[in-house]
Every structure is written in structure tokens, then in C-alpha cells.
Length: 140
Picture: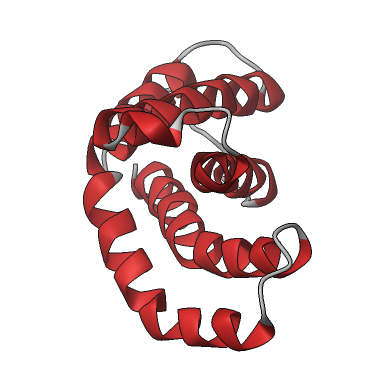
């Protein structure tokens, strides 16, 4: 039972902790921001983390229920991960849309946020090992 919840937490925390770093890297590469601006952005790293934790709660709760539901079905691990990725991308974009509609626009500066969170969460889903999923409930 706890392996399932631990997997969900690992995906959630890796997404929240690594996405700001990924965003800082994208700002240097794509937007060609001054490196000093990027290092100044590290001052607000923890703000990104705290806000990410707070605003992602609804999506991660649904993600957890979906994961538990899919784990009880006779699905291959790859299929479960694909379903979780699809939901995650939808959940991230929906969250950003509800926060501010301009995040889901054609402006690359605004799209970087939901795209970054979606990419990191998808990578987390596929790269973090879940271990074996027990389809039967055993009591200890």
C-alpha cells in the first residue's frame, strides 16, 4: 500500500523541485536572458516550490486516485504510465488556465510554465520506479 503513495509523492516532489531549475535553464537557452537575471531568479526558487506545492494539490490528488484505480486494473506498467502522463499534461494545463488564462496562449513566455511542468512531470512518471504493484490487497 505505501509503495503506491510513495511513488505519487516522488513524482510530485520531483516535479515541484526540478521544474524551476528546468525553467531557469530554458530562460538561458530559449529566451537568451542575461545570466545575471537567471542567477537572480534562484533567489525566488523556493517561492516557485511553495507555490507549486500549493497549486498542484488538486491535480496530484486526482493523479493519486487515478494511479490507484489503474493499478487495480489488469494493465501493463507502460499503459499506466501513459494514462498518467496524459492526465498530468491535462491537469497541469488546466491548473495554469484556471490561475490565469494567459498561461495557455500562443505567447512562448507564458507557455513555458505549463510546458515545463508537464515535461518534468511526464519524465518523472516514466523515470521513477514504482516497484511491483500488488493487485490484491494483503493485510499485514
